Image (tube, rainbow, N blue to C red):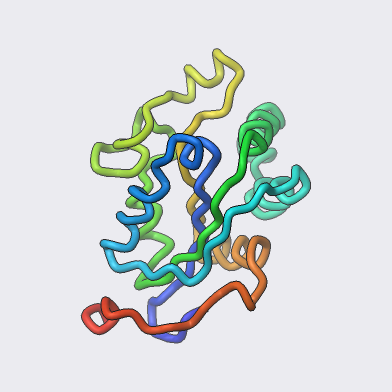
Length: 170
């Protein structure tokens, strides 16, 4: 983790729907504009096992939402490559969660990523036996972020550097 007080790192995954719709750049720009710094970035096609560790071993999705939701999510995530990214900044975990909006796109406020770029409800997804396309994964807590970053990135893929923006935020 970064050395400044309240500076955190968080994981963001651009899901297959974001990659395939071609909105990654627009969403990434939002994170940069608010002052978050990209310290790791890669496009990958994760395996079912890698997703299992992410969603169940770290995220406890089966116990929280059930086996069906877990299976539908994994099937959705395997539909194409994703972009995994580590962002760093002041209270980055909470900031990214706020910018992303609620997990259910239909309920996400206008101005959030999910509110501006997606609209499907959990009910619609359930009726149609599909995952809810909501563009990005954002770490839910500082502890989750630490575990997720270790799962998706090795140390040599994370970079330390100063940005001009930091001059005005620290």
